[in-house]
Every structure is written in structure tokens, then in C-alpha cells.
Image (cartoon, rainbow, N blue to C red; front, top):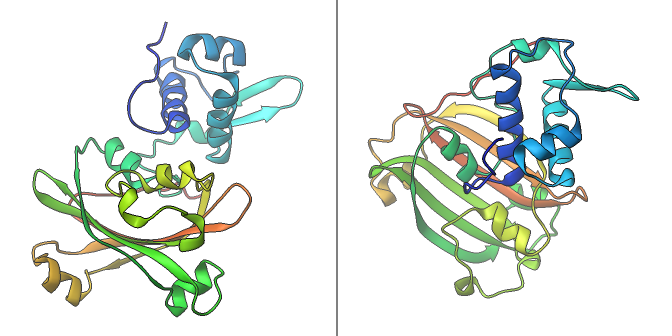
Amino acid sequence: MEEPLRDARTLVVQLRDRIADLIRTEGLKPGDKLPTEAQLTARFRISRPALREALKLLEQDNIIYVEHGRGRFVSALSAVQVDRPITVFESVTDMVAHYGYKTSNKVLSVAEEPADETVAAQLRLAAGDRVIRLERLRLENDTPILYCIDCVPRALVPLRLYDIDWSGSLLDVLGEFKQRPRMSSASVSATMLPADVVERHDLRDFGPALLIEETCFSAAGEPVLHSQDYHRGSHFSFSMVRK
């Protein structure tokens, strides 16, 4: 019997990864039937709703497919090994854990301010609407590997800024207010850190970065977060399946 899921990553994300590992370790081939929901809940000691969410993620990644009345089956794409799909939606906290990094999180600034034109458009805000702007740096063994700017509509967070711990997962913070993001629309580009950021935070050695800029949406389809995450090029790589 598998050990219960206990680490700090989102439960459903953990479970998705464990089921994907099961497909590989048990040698399941395209067209093979996946164990039943009852077998998987017993194996991973997890609730059925959480299991179904994890299975849905695997469907979205085209690792498995469903035949109604017959069950779930392993797809042809399961044979393609993708180290880190860029299409995976997860918090930065979960992402760095997947790479094996044990990072410390430095909050550089947090403030309430009017949304600029770009952020207002992405979050569907009116001119003058306010956002919480969070600026953070993640370090691995004192080496900066991620520089992040996040903007959240102020109306979604009813507490005072100093009553919230901003050093952990922002997705978890939003979840406390029933606004947890479930998906995102993102763009990716190779770039350098902005010059003013480099000077202000002494990040001259950061080097080339992979910028993922995304707007995250709740289950209801409402934009709840706009992020700019600069991944240090020497520490991160992503991959994709082309079909």
C-alpha cells in the first residue's frame, strides 16, 4: 500500500504526479486500462473527489483518456517523456519543490496601489481600481533563482496587508478567501531582469531569465491574479509535447 500524501505541495498535484509515476513504474502501455477509482483511493488513501480532480488533470495533459462505460485508459502520449511540461498550472511553491529546490522566500515589498493599464486590462478592472502588488525573491542556498511580481485585486482580500503572511504560496492565500486560481493564460519569453530591479535589489549575477507572464482564473472564470515570474535560466528548464 502506498504511503499517504503528506508533503507541502497541493494534494491534487501530488496525486496527479503519483498516478503518472504508477503508469510508468507498472509498465502500463497505451491502451491499457487504469486501475479503478476504488483501487486508486485505497492505494493512495485519498478521497474520491480529490482523486477525480487529479485524474482530470491527467486527462487535460492527454496522459489518460476516458471511454464512458468502460473506464480510463493510458493514452499514446504517456509514452512521451516530458520532464517539466510548461502547460502545467501550479503555484511557484509547488513548481520549485518539483525541481527539488528548498527555497527561502524573501518579501521585497507589498503595497496597495492603483493598477497600471496592463494589469487593469488583464484583471478586468476599471481605471483607478486598486490592487495588492507583491514583489518577492526566491533563493536556493542564498542564490536568487526566481524574481516574482504578483498583482491581486484589492477587493478580493478583505484583511489588512500586515495581517497576512505573504511568504508562502499566494494560491493558498487566495484559497482562504475562496478565490483559489484553477487555470491560467500565459505567455513565455526569454529576457533579462529589468535594469531598475537589478540595481535596486543587487541582482547583477541573475543572468538571462525565462519570463512567464500569466493571468490566473478562479473556477468561476474570474481573473484573480496577474503574475510576472522571472526564472533564472541556469536553474530552470521546461519542455513540451508537440503534436
